[in-house]
Image (cartoon, rainbow, N blue to C red; front, side, top):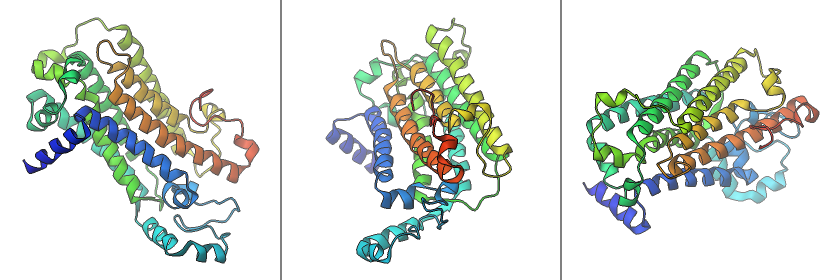
Length: 331
């Protein structure tokens, strides 16, 4: 109870409700990712991982998190103890295989919230009771909520399956903050998919009859569900192709010839479809899912940028100069 009292005090002080706080989390996470990616001292130590962290502009291969060999001794001395602290923090890494835990968290979150929403559990009640009356009145319908929950559960399940069957032995490691932020994102996304439907659930409890969607699909559903499925299929094909490569080579699959990371673009389209599909009546988009999409686009956009730089260093600038990063004609 003391914890909830502190939460209420914090929300009141910030003049926010649970929905505002969730949106703020996604946007703050996106801003933090950008801020860490801009200074080279932070970017080289904490952002790069895997093959992207093994090639420098000079062609040397430093250990991830260490300073490039080309850095002069004078620069190293001038950086002082602050540089030593950053180097130490950069050693706090976990295996890249921990990415699988993101999708375990996603699937577990979907199952947990299905039970909480169906039986009006105490955790759901604790969150829904902290949603403002204004947001409760602008609620998604139960049909919208169920469709969106199912699609997000499908996304998490597919990615978990892919992370298992497409896994390859790797000594690559990621900074521990990436791992924590990833877990936080997937757990928060599990809440974001239903929180703007709190009003509908509080008005009428879910029953098994609600699982029988008999209404004709709206234009929004008719467009967004196929978009989700197409983007999911595209992403799966990309992941399967990358898994089929025997070593790190420049992808020659047709879709990769014009885009550096089409699977990242597909991920953005997946969350974009959910953003429109989950829009409450009278609104164009679901603003909570839009903030979720913002984090996805920023995080993957920065990774795609680093991937293109790595391709240029490894295969030559001309090989990928004209390729878009994620989405043709946009980015």
